[in-house]
Amino acid sequence: MTDEVFLKDDLIRLRKDMGLTQQQMADALDMALRSYQSIESGESEYRFIHRLAAERVALMIAADKKAPMLAPQPVRDDAIELVRVGRLTGDPAFQTTRAKDDVGSDEQGDDRDARFRAAYRVVGELVLLATALDHQLNHVLIQVLHLVESPMLEAVIATLDIVRKIEMLKERSKFIAQSKWQKPVLSYVEKLERVSKCRNIACHTPLIPDEKHGAVLVPTAAAKLLKTLQLGKEPVANRVPYVELQSAITLGESALADGLNLIHNFQRVNVERKRRFG
Image 1: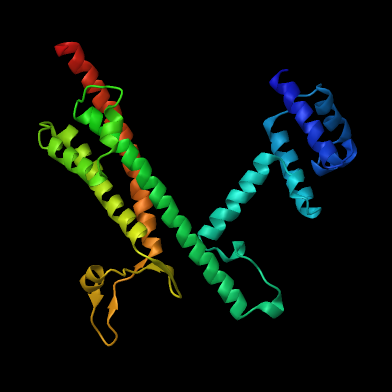
Image 2: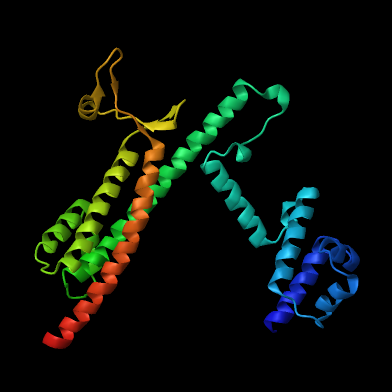
């Protein structure tokens, strides 16, 4: 079956699932009936713009009938992702709404809960990103240190703490003579250290609700409390708003890209070294 036949059959199935006649579908797409029928029959090309319009119709009908499964899977996925991002950013338009007589403390409580859940999502994203960076660092070390590949090499390096791996990379950078090769390594290391620090704060510091920021990270260990204590009328420990972790996520994404470049460039160097020196 060709792509065109598949798309045509897909359009027919979508129309029937929504319970529409050809005339109703043509009206919804603002097309003449004959033009629409020629698409279903295969006389006219079923183009991407037609597919987008049909999916839009399905979305409107699914919402009108309160039957979300009528919308195609890609449309449902996009709608769910849009709502997730809207709630994560705290946009009021995407928060849970209440009836007018419920506006007040209950509505404020819902908003606080939404902001607190958003904070946990940011923490989770940071932790997953830090884990990905730790895994990538194994391969960066193998290439930058010119290690001989073996079946258990990565497994052995993976047993090392990320702090130790960063130290190894920093020491190796001292022996890279050319600055255009040394600077990217040092920049990558600096980003890893900052992301790792934020990851440790996120993982080892309790997250508590906060009226102003939605949620803040507050230290509980005595050493950290005394270190961050701010003296005043009411002495308080330094609190880190969860939104500050967002910058660490952006930095981590940049570090992932830098790591890929390092692996690629040093792989080329190692291939050339092997060619020249065996």
